[in-house]
Amino acid sequence: MSEIEKKQDLSAVEYTDISIGNENAKPFLTQLKGFWVTFAMMFRKVNTVQYPEVKEPTAARFHGRHQLNRHPDGLEKCIGCELCAWACPADAILVEGGHNTDELRYSPGERFGAVYQINYLRCIFCGLCIEACPTRALTMTNEYELADNDRAKLIFEKSDLMAPLQPGMIEAPHPYYPGTDDQDYYHGKVKSSHPSQQNNGQVK
Amino acid sequence: MREIILDDPLSIVILKAVIIFVICLVSTILAVWGERRLVARMQMRLGPNRVGKFGVLQGLADGVKLALKEDLIPAAADKIVFIIAPIISATTCFMAFAVIPMTGEITLFGEKTSLQLTDISVGVLYILSIASIGVYGIVLAGWSSGSTYPLLGGLRSSAQVISYEIAMGLSLVAVFLYAGSMSTIDIVNSQSSWWFAVTLFPSFAIYTISMVGETNRAPFDLAEAEGELVGGFHTEYSSLKFALFFLAEYVNIIGVSALATTLFLGGYHALPGLGFTESWLGGWFTFFWFFAKVLFFFFIFVWLRGTLPRLRYDQFMKFGWKVLIPANVIWIMVVAVLRYFSNQGTPRSVIIAFAGGVILIYLFASMIWERAAKNRAETVSSRPVPAAPSFPIPKLPMDISTISVPKAGQERVIHE
Image (cartoon, rainbow over all chains, first blue to last red; front, side, top):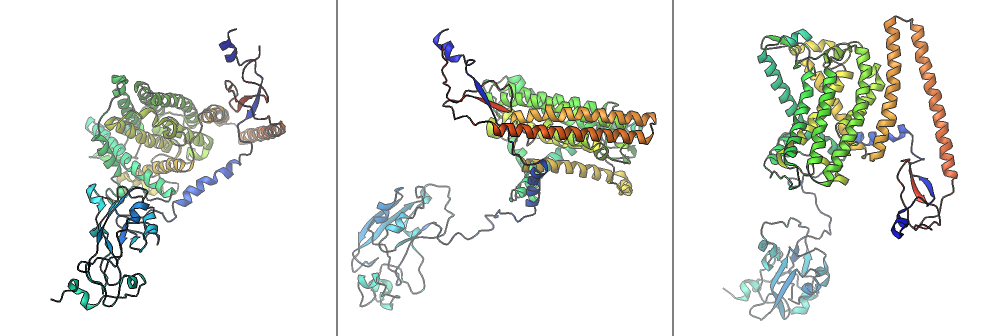
């Protein structure tokens, strides 16, 4: 007997039989209960939502499309610090900061986000950018319809992400509220815009 | 009844053939949609509801989609057989309808007739033989694909259909005995007082089970088992060839349902007590009753699919050969004896005594069986559980209810 034959000859092993049948099976009529389950289910309310026609509201804190927020007078909250871009695990955010001057002021303080792009082909909606943002400029909306037929369209620019102007807000750039500085903005002391801020502070 | 079918002029025969063909096609389209809607409701979904009103045209849309797809033939396939197989499936499934009586006496363009293409004295045997030719479609499709999964599916299917055809054929024997004929019309007419579903209930139950096995439907859909065999015999099929298999499956379902209606539920006759409706619309209303009964069976098919998981292959075979067929044979013997008694004009008391004796024997046998099962369960539970071996080595499964593992502590490599 060669070595290989010896290994293949299993007849010398003693075997014991283990049952694989189910000894504790329920009686036949009990098993038929399953038919009632499916039958009764036909008359229950269905879970399906007729999506394009009917849109159920999302959970309150659903992670949807991003939004760049504004101070109550309309100045942008984003200071172009790039912390969101650094926090992003998918490398979906591109920020280029710009310098604020007294003539062209977009946000309180020294810097503002001159270029702000989020690539929704990359974004995984984890929300780490929102946690990283020091000024609460970046938050997420509940908007989830982000499909498109073109890759370029899914890179959202700053203009796509800026929050809409609320009543009392004036589109940046414009000067500080009279008699305030950046600290007053951060501490929430500016509640609304002032007529002198219109047209970037230029009197027509 | 037979005479008014057989004296039809050729034009009426062709017209009826077209009508039956259209009925099959339309009911397939509706069946695809209806099944998906029903299963969806059983799973708390809505199902297809976009194409047409309530989505009724879903089946049609699927057909158009399939027709427009690319028709692939694998390089390893046996081309001729590969093309013939779906044609066999799709043609044979229609042929069974030729002898199904769908209505009572009606008038078609001034000709007294009935919606049944022809009548053969061995009508039901004809249906059975056509059904078994239909299996060739599946087997050949699996074999000619030149691929592993289709081959497995085809083999399973042939074994399955052969096994369940025996049970199916045997369940019809009792019907033949009581109707005294194999002609579908005679069988329908002999159910005028009592449906065979009531008087021959065991046959009815066995037929209903085996017709599910016969049509490869859940829970007996081992031939296409998408979880393990991808799609089974039709894995390599695409486009119109796949559509033909799809069509054949649904026409077959309607076919066996129609046969069940004819043999066990009184065919086109109205429900008991509603016999006056049969003359409505000049006799055409009987088609409604026929169709309603077919729909009842179709619902059973869908209900089974929505409820039961697929059987394991050995369980399935065991059920067919060790339960359905023996039970059927015993039942046929009982029916034959009762039939003999009634033909001989034996007094009622003898018949009752015989029936009572059969019931007593059945009770006694089932009692012994249960006691044996209990004893077996006790010996199994009292058996010491062996320690887990390092390598379980399977033996050839002589007894399928057990698997064999080496005894505790034994090595896998054999000693000198």
